[in-house]
Image 1 (tube, helix red, strand yellow):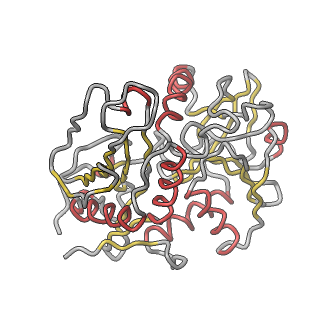
Image 2 (tube, one colour; image 1 turned 90 degrees about the horizontal axis):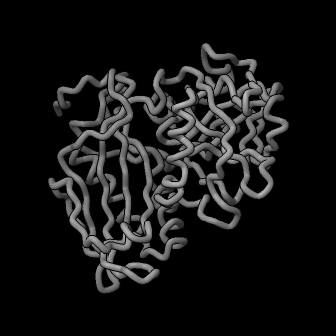
Length: 343
């Protein structure tokens, strides 16, 4: 199969229209079978629930071309489960998990020419999402919904790829205690937009959000979870009911323990102890693992021993092992890789 004529090596993390997307509609209490369509526009009522009350959730995952030329998707079953959790919290109808995975596979297959070639440094980003589509003026859940999947080829999330970034401690809160921080709701990201624009204007790549209740514990950034490495090589990641359960983080912890033999710990991480870690990174589908070289705490700098030139040694091993699994270099745990068979 011939790939599209795209400058793969210089792709940024942005949207590029591809050939097909999947669309299914929920009406009268049931989902239809859905279909692949060419039209990339969405037509809804001016009073649609998603426009009035932000009733929407989404997912993100990637498809890769392996060294032997196969197209694979990384752990889409976990994205299906996480979207189910988001839907339940937002009073939206669950799109069945098997149909979710099938819709994702169909969409990737229909856009196989856009899956970047092996070794290009690019991937095919997959965005499933759902929203309340019928008119709602009183504050209540919608009665009709649309589930869609589109794809777009992307490069690294942060400029410079795997070069260490500088982040800051934010004065804003990302999620309230007992709120919606643990699901992938669009409203969570809307709340973070002002903070990230402000951070970028001041020269920082991201925000470090502390817990809203006490502002003493590390939570996450606007779009990724944290991982820390202690000076004796232990992998530590923050635990909180307000953190989105990252599939990448979950995979990293497994890789650390079962592939690299490292000790792992998921626990509350107090901000006061961050200065004592040897390495810091942000992990997520978009970022994979992005090393953090420095954290700015209102003018006071926390500089990690790993420095600003390259990933720390343990973070690099985690990155290489995880991407090795995704790209087919290393044998994956059972169920982690979903192959897209091209006829």
